[in-house]
Image (cartoon, rainbow, N blue to C red; front, side, top):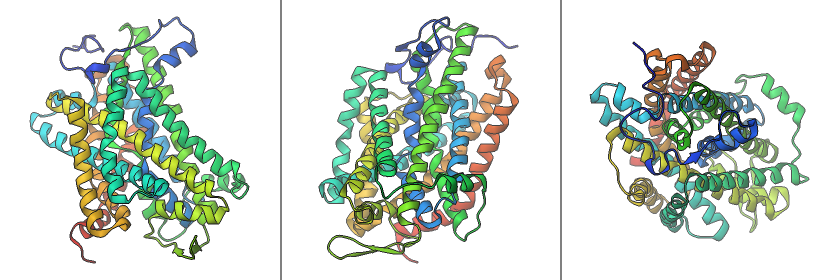
Length: 465
């Protein structure tokens, strides 16, 4: 027999991000649209940075450089699937009143708890590895700090997060929104402010309207784009962040919360799409059709399938576009990407540890644990193999993400499809079909690309051909 006992605020037990739970007040349902939207906006902004983190940059840059606008439709499709999945994640948090990790603990067999938690931790550390590398490469490019020491410096960004947490959720959201805006502004200037980078909108429109893989190698890059888009930790995090809003538990309030979180998700992830599209467009304009460029000092930088495109872009944007501003803007955006993703990765770590295991530790300890899991392999590999190993490390991180993703998506969709858990707030058939289709497609692509990724990771870890 269904009851209303499962609605948020009436579920006994653990709270998601307890220090931030129910800390943002929401106006009554009769308040105007914009007041409501302003109150609910924020959680999806924190989530969207995972869709434009340094791990996405390499695939977007590679796709644009090798296939021009041919894979723009993959970026659009990935973003659309991400919107469906994040809307579903937020709906679970609002209706059930628990985050995804708590739901897995409470409603899945007990024996799954520890394996799921370990996989989550590995996935979060893998995400953090990409963020470490992005921030470190940006520091190296902007200030000339050796990559090894730049990686070490990133360990201290824990101070930033701890400072923000003292001020509450709105300050965290404002900081991340500022970093996201920095990325957007940098790319807007790169594409629309520089005379040499005028995009062909007609050609882009044709590429979006004609999906397919007409050239060899496109499918592999497309799998990389999709695999780098939906992050498993974001599904856990979003269902927790929406519980930072304090609203009444009547039907009208729940309906409003579901509606405005859906709007928040759609807008934030649309921004992430435009950033990813901008990265690919810039690469298409600047690199497509070229096989090398001469940089300052006479060095020739060759473009290959295995290029470290983040570093190549920084080194070559200035000579190709005729202004050092291009490379500086690129590095600033990269640093903003790494730092914003770091903040959300830490919060996700808290959510999964407390949700699965009911363990509570000090935020700074939690942060250092996650960061050390990311920094140690980065320091070891960079120390042994040098600065050219960044792409290899990102490859290793994708293995853990691909392994964890089905373990996040499938339980989430199972919970949201359950009439027992969701009651009358169970989504309609179109959203359920969109969610399940997205999950199956993403999982299939990850599994398809997993053997190659594992082989590459094995090569990085143990050498060989």
